[in-house]
Image 1 (cartoon, rainbow, N blue to C red):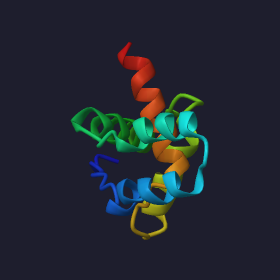
Image 2 (cartoon, one colour):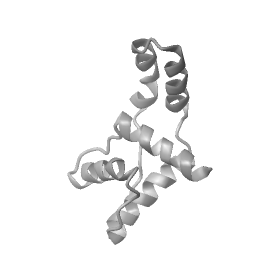
Image 3 (cartoon, one colour):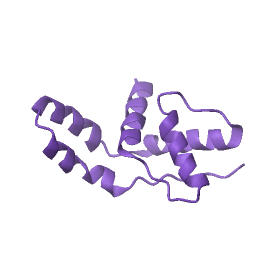
Image 4 (cartoon, rainbow, N blue to C red):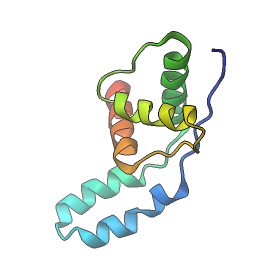
Length: 103
């Protein structure tokens, strides 16, 4: 398959920060979550996701175990004809992986 996949991050993921901070009462944890959630996905994030999706669809190569569930969820949505939806936990695991590989 030579299909390129474009990934769109739903706005509700970034808007979710208010709800998360409202529910959590620990100031230290709020600060850490705010840092993770506030990072707007940039070009590197979208390239990471698109590259792993395209590599899997083209070659059948699984992504690294840390982000495999997130990538496979997006592929499942795409193959099922649904809008690709990035779940909050998947978004966080992808961001954490991106941070790790950038170091």
